[in-house]
Amino acid sequence: MSHLGYGCLMTVDREQVLRTAAALLSRKATATMDEVARAAGIGRATLHRHFAGRDALVRALEALGIQEFEAAIDQARLHDGTAEEALRRLVAGLEPVAGLLAFLVTENQLFEGDQMNEGWARLDARVSALFRRGQERGEFRIDLTPAWLTEALYGLIGTCAWAVQDGRVAAKDFQYMIVELLLGGARRSVER
Amino acid sequence: MSHLGYGCLMTVDREQVLRTAAALLSRKATATMDEVARAAGIGRATLHRHFAGRDALVRALEALGIQEFEAAIDQARLHDGTAEEALRRLVAGLEPVAGLLAFLVTENQLFEGDQMNEGWARLDARVSALFRRGQERGEFRIDLTPAWLTEALYGLIGTCAWAVQDGRVAAKDFQYMIVELLLGGARRSVER
DNA sequence: AGCTGGTGAGACGTTGATGTCTCATTTGGG
DNA sequence: CCCAAATGAGACATCAACGTCTCACCAGCT
Image (tube, rainbow over all chains, first blue to last red; front, side, top):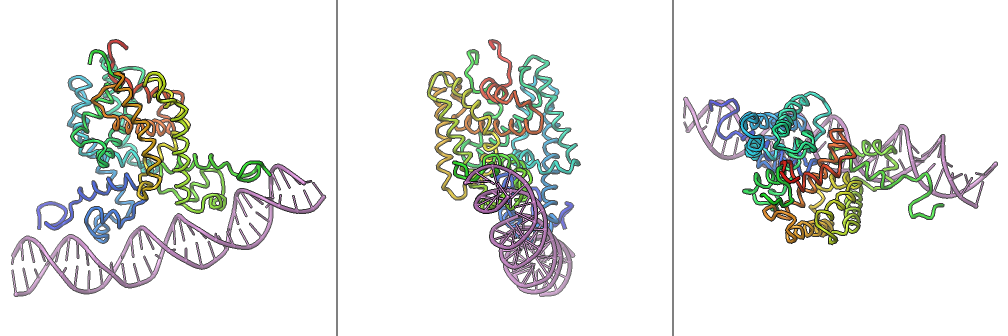
């Protein structure tokens, strides 16, 4: 028996299953439980042993996504240094969570039962506060609202995660493409 | 009898139904045919008379989305003037199609049967060519690939469309938020 | 070697969405 | 005024996914 809470050695890696499920479900929300199981390399019965049903799976995805998102925010120390540096740290920490994040952003189906909604709202507020801090410091433009910059960050992370999955963007360019576009935009400035 | 191809006056507005369906399905891909019908303000039977089934509905969404996307590209005259001006025209023309576009980008389920895929690939190539033209003219940065800028444009349009739906962004700011972020980024430059 | 616990494969009943049907109603045109 | 066309509501059978179960198998531990 392992010292961990969930099972022995040949036990399924719960997080790995959830990440695979997120990657699949964010691209094909109508995927079958069987498809999810196969994508994770396990049997449908095993998937069902770990997550009582589709709802439970989605809830687990939501919980893990919010948890890891929050951990990334904590670790990024959004209040330290310039807002730009903080944003770069945040995106760097968010890279491993990009698949989960893409699922969360896409599946607003979750926010029907306004329960976990508060968890997401708290994350939203913290990211939004980062952009507001950047505006107050004079780093960021004030004509783009913090709410929009927050949404745009989510959107770009999800889009880039998909682009990497499909091979349209190199995985090593993930952070650069997102941060550079979000901060600097496509226009070529003179002083850059 | 109307002179139009599809029915008399009290006939369902096919495009309106498709736009509503796209707005709903892009947010809740598992929505029931009944939910789609109710969202469009029609009965399930009527929805079924116009679209033989869920697949047919999705195909129609895809066809309409590609068609209107292509029309917007044609009308934007991507080869005229500066690339920035062309991009602004494109986003302006894409605003009414944003819901369809968000659905198309999200539902890569469509691209399993690689058939309509070519239609999408052609659009991709044209938008990508616009960004490449901007780079060659010295307007746009060359460290962000045209493919990524294209994906980012799609992602931002979809994200902004959702943000407008949820009231987080004012509808009148749609074009401004997308173009300004995509071109200029969040960083406050000295010469702007 | 024997035991225990987790897994995969498959069978099975249940459920909900789907697709088709009929019928009453309404709308617009002849 | 009457008819044609389209719609909405509902009934109905079908079917695929779901959730549960059993059983055989395999890995690790004692």
